Image (cartoon, rainbow, N blue to C red; front, side):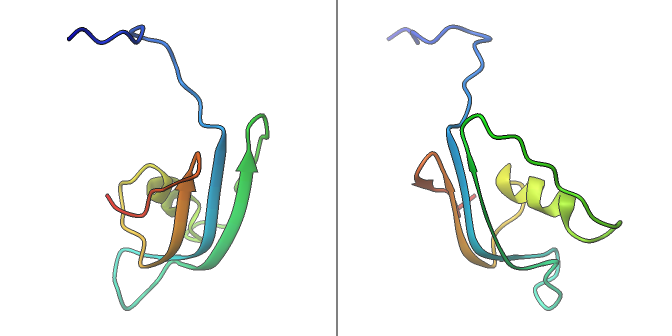
Length: 83
């Protein structure tokens, strides 16, 4: 069966939800502690903070590159905690 999606067509997510997220690179040292925020389609957000505060960790977590220790991550309403 042929894939009917157009190659190169960029699909955008319509909603991102993080609830009480805890995550880190070492289990005993969480980088993110109780982080919650929501992004709706069309919104633009910026992550600001000092070096080492968890900005890149949040992006890696959303991309599925690191696991969530606790909390829930939803992309377009689908729970996405599992890598």
